[in-house]
Length: 125
Image (cartoon, rainbow, N blue to C red; front, side, top):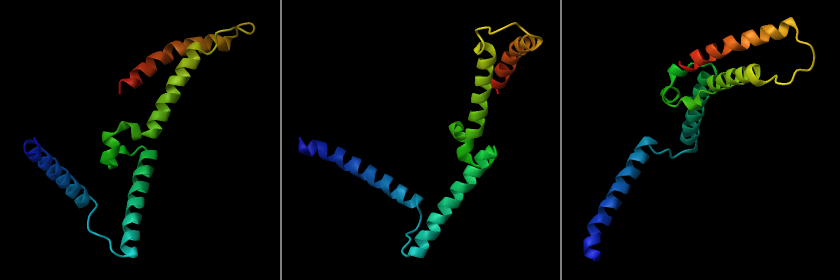
């Protein structure tokens, strides 16, 4: 039985070894000195800062990660959530009348009817 399983185990080990070598290649050359290590980490920090700044400025096209993973688009997500909240409040927020209706109440009702169409159009983009 051991002889039958040995080739499978050997293949698994070789596969994991090749994956480990690929991962090692991704991090680049060895950094022996503290100065090399510091520069490497500074480069990572600078790249992160650049991606963060472009994400906050909605310049998603500058970085592949921002075009592929839309969950990293925080300003857009916040704006969308605010739009949905505003729509919900306009539509459902005032359910108990507290006094006499005024002209501004009629404007809010008319505006909330139009706003739903705008939110639906924006969500299609």
